[in-house]
Image 1 (cartoon, rainbow, N blue to C red):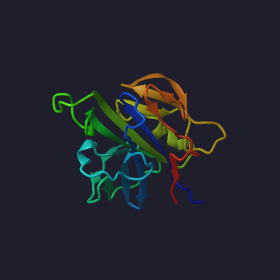
Image 2 (tube, rainbow, N blue to C red):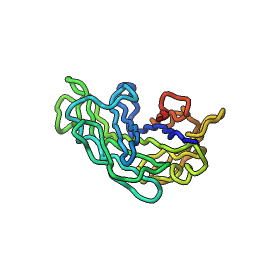
Image 3 (cartoon, one colour):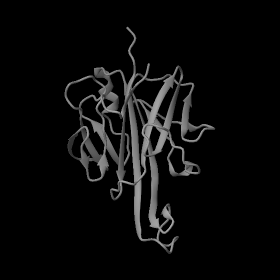
Length: 208
């Protein structure tokens, strides 16, 4: 029997919550001996980012399977990263982040600048955003990989397997600097943290 890999995508932010803020997410797929990650930026999940000149905003995506960490490399196409000639694990996590950046509301709209760089700032915030996608078979072996912290400052850690078909919502714990304030159910909002992780939600994908 062939097992189809299943993935779920999560996004988090450390910032003052704004409905106009651009979200960051990462999706992935594998092809034989390579893994491809696609960073999304904006409001059109799960599409890849399209805004030009933003490459330097993001850290390189990293793949971890509990045994090794592989940094994916940029391709000629913006927002697309690849790790080639690797054995593709059955269960793995890909993480990405928007680097810490000052964002200011100015007379020309939102700009990546602080008050010293723009004299017309009416509001300024320091923000960083995190994204991850987890891939597995939906079986019990997934949790040994996907339930482990990866070292991001703010993380969603599954308590139950979100890739497993279930009538019950998946459960997670939010970890900030390796400290967990509590558990959440999929779809919760906590302190500017937004995520949707049910395999039945639009934030989930199945790959054939």
